[in-house]
Image (cartoon, rainbow, N blue to C red; front, side):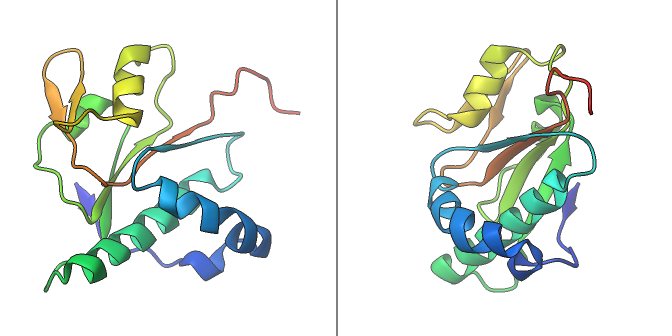
Length: 146
């Protein structure tokens, strides 16, 4: 299900992230996915949603799309992204996937799509769109929290 409303914006993030990290990160989101690893509750999910909404607004302005809202689709596995045609203003977000359940080949194909825009999964190909924002947030750091 596509989500189109979120109360935070880029200016809601910490100043250091806004000023030093995002100017380098936003251009990378056009060609590859971002992966955030960390302990639960540190703000990975809101940060990714904020970036997804910003990239969606960028694509809407760039392509002069009328009547379209930026958004994101969030799931725990790649299988959930197979049911809907991708939209460039809609980010795909793997939120805390179980590392032991997701195949490394599937993860690699999600991060780096090929020229045809496919992501080879276990059963069928999930269609991805070129320049579509993709992100992964995981609490599975391999360590116990302090």
